[in-house]
Amino acid sequence: MFKRLFILLPYLLSFVLMWLFWTTAFSTSWARISALQTIEPYAFAVQEQLLANFSETGSFFQTIHRGYDDAWTWSGHRALTLPIVGYIYAYFPSPLGLSGIMISWFVLGAIGAGQIGRNHLESHWGYFWGSAVYLLAPASMALALQDYQDLCLALPCLVFAWFLFERGHWFLSTLGTLLAIAPREETIPMAIF
Image (cartoon, rainbow, N blue to C red; front, side, top):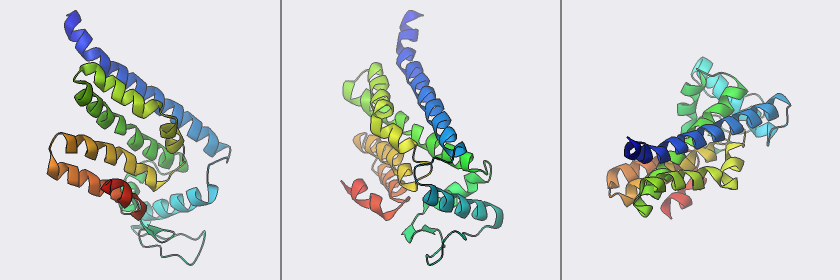
């Protein structure tokens, strides 16, 4: 009984850590949005309007600024994740929902980081340490609190691609890498290296 509990304990602690990260990021993000103190109000408004219009009409357009190509882009960047997030956004249609989508996606990267930790430390406790390193890094919280930035969606995919690459799953690793470069073209150098 205790041996089985000892094996499950690192995974349970990782889940608790993921939940604490998620609740902290959600409450902080929602407080900022409610107080109109977002990181980049203009960009957040454009993203939210693009996704709201897509979820309602099936096409991307916005009226906040002119001069940019609105076809699944943001400021001219090719963001292949916009249609995916647009469909999810339809279930949570608000600025709060949009930040929640990004935070939830971001937290999932702790699973891949935990797998990497478990493989390197060759221990169930390695899973906890991998998740903890991912979630407790100050950069992780800073990324999760970016209101909504499609670039932040790349990190969990890169972490999963790294885990799959180390396990020898070449096809899945390639798929994870392609998902990691979907948010924007700036993520291509990160995926290659």
